[in-house]
Image 1 (tube, rainbow, N blue to C red):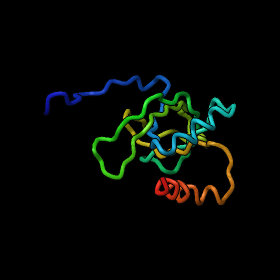
Image 2 (cartoon, rainbow, N blue to C red):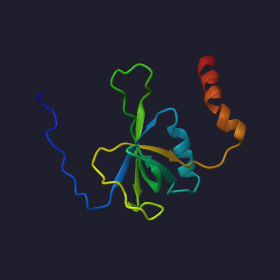
Image 3 (cartoon, rainbow, N blue to C red):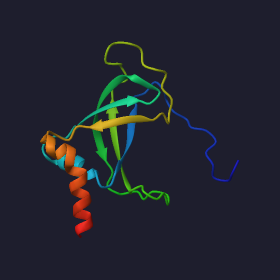
Length: 133
């Protein structure tokens, strides 16, 4: 045990739950732009990594105003915390896996429609733009 290490986490498992999503800094612009385009509650689809069978729905409730640096990890960009709420019910009526604080999810925030070429090539385009500057 080291000084400053968390000994336990206390959580009210019966209250409403929130997702804390970590969005890379180079992607948060899409989320902010979509939210400013008259879509205050952006839809979020996610799956619990412990239960990939079910897809859950939620919506963005808050976007942090600060960028958090990564802890000296090469290849990782700074991140922005996005909070989302969700209904704990499974979409097909099956019981939800027993939830625990700290579980991880894979999430997708719906930021609007784009052309197929943009979806496939925007990462390449951004990389070329960064190299050109």
